Length: 179
Image (cartoon, rainbow, N blue to C red; front, top):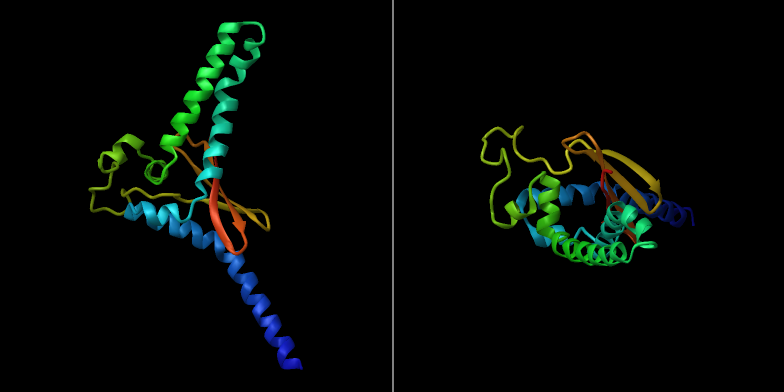
């Protein structure tokens, strides 16, 4: 009987360890996929519908906040808000792809990455100058099913990559852009 209890405890500890290490393994898989420019491997680590919805909401809130406040009194501002919202949706849908996400994580322009232009420092033999996706992140568990990795952009503003757990699997589900 004691053997079964110890076996169950061992399985529970192993499972808890696997779940706790999951976000780190996911970030490592994302980092490797971006370095290898493997869109399929990157897509397997990202929940694109959630990511697109989160980015659309942030852009919509940030860019259209002032325009919507004026839209109540001004019909032209209301029309402009509708057009801007539609444009944001289209841009996010076209840019939040494995290629676009890889470019963002390398600090590269999406159109350069799509055209096969190597990021600055990629041709250098010095590994310190090569693009480093998710470079020097600070990690934090926000809950048992939410984990963040925060990196700094070129202007030293925080960019937060949010991973969520679904069952035993972790995926990138949101990016909190700097304001």
